[in-house]
Amino acid sequence: MAEEASVVEEGLPPSQTPLVSVSFERNVNWKQKYLEAEPNALGITQIGLSLFQIISTVLFMSKGLSVTPTGIPVIILSLLVLIAGSLTVAAQSLHLPTLKACFGMQIVAVPASITNMIFALLQMNDLPFICMLNYYDQSFTSRNYCHNIESTISHFYSPVITVQAPAAQL
Image (tube, rainbow, N blue to C red):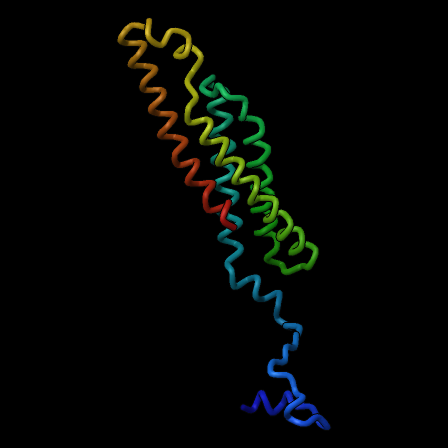
């Protein structure tokens, strides 16, 4: 009731006053609200998971276990997420340009993570070239070897997809 009384302007009869009055106030502590969301934890998580993605992609590419040509885009997109995490940690100083850069890079990091998740789904079906040549003509040992590699790749990329999912929901 006290709020409604403060809305009534002087000189206007009660029948002409608005039912709802909206006013916007600038919050003087708006930078402190950023710190309440635990940006340091987000940044460190993004940095760690991006490094995991980059190292694992380079490892699979160097060992010839990646058939699809998605390695370089995954590395580039993971670097974008790594930069976003670094800016998130750096934004602890509450410097306005750093906060703006952090927000912009977080917007870029979401589609990068979604794209990395799609690439990880594609890479789950990768088989080394030697296993694709003569899959049915191989000896039992070769088939067992290829089956183990296929199982390892699918078990490896399942957590990679899980790693990308939280970053895509930002």
